[in-house]
Length: 288
Image (cartoon, rainbow, N blue to C red; front, side, top):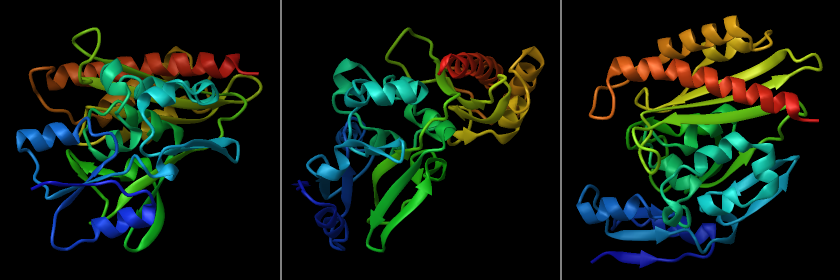
């Protein structure tokens, strides 16, 4: 019989996950886990629900940025005015995770740890340079978000570990980010391609730093350094955007499936990266 546990502290959750006589699964939102359990795709003897742990359910400011609990829902993220203003691209990705009903449960932690290459919440976090706190039997450690997923459905977390929170650093005075995806339908679909761009400008409008991330074009979301370098030192004009698109396409290693071919995904990756860069640039220019 499947047991269901509701720890109220991180320490209690760690202890439950250390049980050697059972297989425990972590539930942050449950929108993926419950489907996988019911379909038999994964097996478990117990579920550890993290939503009653206060540390995982809060959004708080820290050093000018934000620390976001791993079990905070997409709806709560979208309703946070200061976070949405500072990191609109991150929120754009988070708010694309499922329907309005799913948004009330789906969490950023679950979206990252489900390790889907097409996860909408991940590219924006990678582009923002977000880190996450991981806790387990060995204590706490901090890693970059792009180090979590290693392949479809698999993460770098050790047995008994789970994500406690994410840290989004302060956005610069002339910084901007954006996330775009392509889907066959108008809503509630899985990304065929996703692209996130975060960039910083100097007083004259020249890009001094950039991070470009792609989703659904490789076994995991990618930080594309060559695409990032294509923007630095430019005003994000046509030549820089073409170089960005070329670098994005070169980084792609997608699959053929019913939603898109390799050739299609590769081409769209360059197009979306350009469009996201333009939006991020305009957002950066408009900031005081």
